[in-house]
Length: 170
Ligand code: NI
Image (cartoon, rainbow, N blue to C red; front, side, top):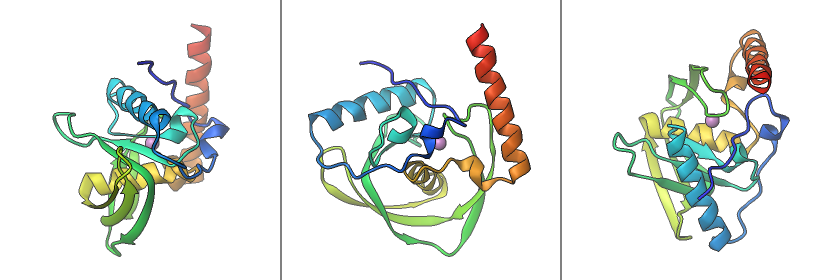
C-alpha cells in the first residue's frame, strides 16, 4: 500500500472544506487503509483526509498506547459538546514540530459511519475528545494554529516555509 503524501501548513489546500462521503465503497476502504498506514508511519494519533489532499469527510484516529485501536469516522457530525472546556497541547502532522495549547470542549458526542458503513455514536473525553475535534476542524479547512495569536501563527508560517525551502534545497 502506498504511503500518502501529507500536505504541510501553510499549504492553501489545507483550507478546503470537505464534502460528504457519498458511499462507503471499495475506493473509500482503500483510502482508509492507506490513511491508517500513513498515520502510523508518521507516528500520528489522527489524520483527516484533507491532510492527504482528499476533500471528503473522513478521519482516522488511534489514541491507544499499543497503536492497535484504529477508529474510523466517516461523515462525522457533532451532536453534543460539553460547556466545560479544557486546554491541552496539540500537534499536527501537517505542522511538524509545533505544539501549543488549544481550548476545546472537554467531552463530546459524535455520530459517524465506521469503516463498514455502520452508523455509530461515539462519546469521548480527554485526549480522544481533543483529537476528534482537531480532525473535524481539518474537514472544515481549519488547522489548529488558527486558534493561536496572529503573532505566533506568523512565526509558525515563516518557520514552516523556511523548513520547506531547506528540504527542497537539500
Ligand atoms: Ni492535524
